[in-house]
Length: 230
Image (tube, rainbow, N blue to C red; front, side, top):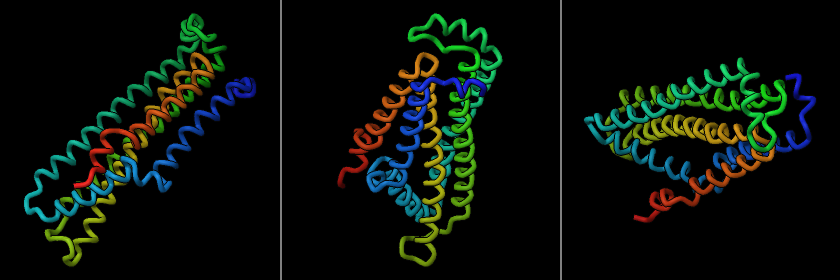
């Protein structure tokens, strides 16, 4: 951390752009009015519909299988993130060798050892954040399976059914939202790797990730299909 006071102005500007893109898009997609019309908001409507259909079924093997698939997906990312974190910790221990490698890269390399460690710490923090989100999402999907197991049988409008459907859909939404946050951390973690080359590459990749996320969440063919009228 001794390198922090010695960061150049362009490094600080790149870091501000990086965190502004990450935090700004997170707020926009989760809390703005526009966010409700994206993939996240649209998929929440289908989760509520799924909850109602699940409560109408006496046999819920299909629902259990679907939740199992979701759990497997989250588990895959959580396990992969552990390996990435271990690799970054190992890179911190071999900073001198890594510095000699990055010295031959374009845009000036990673700088001195202290600066390289700061850059690796940004990468490490991004994937640690992703790991916490994936594991919390995994726990919430496990709680969702409990809700499905304890669910009553009935149709919309019957006593207790509407409230239980909203509870199931809510648990599904919370787990899905944390999974999305973990995926978003992966995207910005990749952008953070650009700092090893140059602060300008870091800022450029952060803006590129912002554009990619926006297009996929609000202008993709998937959203158009889900939002199409019946």
